Length: 350
Image 1 (tube, rainbow, N blue to C red):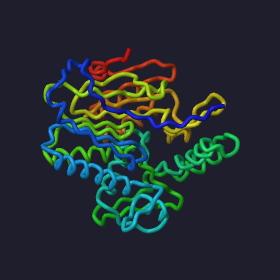
Image 2: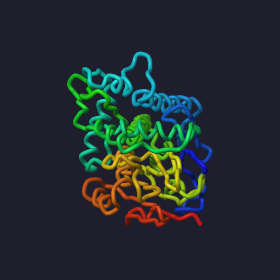
Image 3: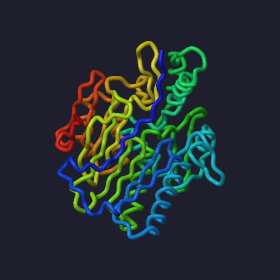
Image 4: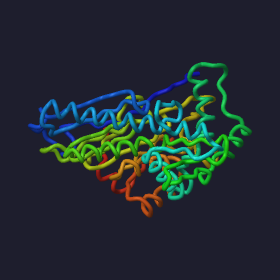
């Protein structure tokens, strides 16, 4: 029996053969900065139109510093000196309110709102369940003992601690409180999207509009470089590690993918991955990956998880009535389904 653990990378590439793009003189202006110490993934920032090396150094430091700030704020596993972060909140569950930075208040408020918009599919109080599955997944991937899955009793006990209404946010005083001991916030479904959107805002505040931010399965793209009609954003194949399913040819767009090939283990011919359905306490079934195309990276992050968990019909209704977005589903049987808007900008890789 083989156990696989991969990091899925949805990345942006520039192709001269797709989307009517041509090789521009601005190639000499392309700058790319890559780092590995935030959000447990490779983050690549591609920039065009910078004035000189000094501006590149300044902007690359800005991007890294902001990603690192959000990484530390939203970390549920590690503490950092001089900071109350999500781990601090989780460790004090059942106690008093914890004073935190405004971005934590903002993220959690948006996370609670996402719960109601998605009918509970995205639940930032799901930490007891995701933590339970992570312990089993870590044992499986590290070879500790026989492969196993959580028992029904363990899942039921963890699910009883998941309560979106148990996250008490006091915006006026800047505090967060978890009402029950054992509760745990997990923002894995929304944190990178929030951070990428904030970094993009910071770039545009600097007058930089031609960029691509690629953070694992999250891509935030600004304007295409002069002389090109669009960025080509590659979507990883869930069936071929390192392979590309196709290209989204667009600009000023966020493309976020959730898939079952990121963190998982296989047992008895069944894949137990990290995207947990809050209603069942089990890994969601039916899809191999879901990619979302929309303007806002945070919304795309929410929707990629929600639509992975939901029946496709419900997901289509959600993005039609509540969000302005398009989607690409890759089903367990290999079929690809997509909305009309996604089909207009998607190109297969032959």
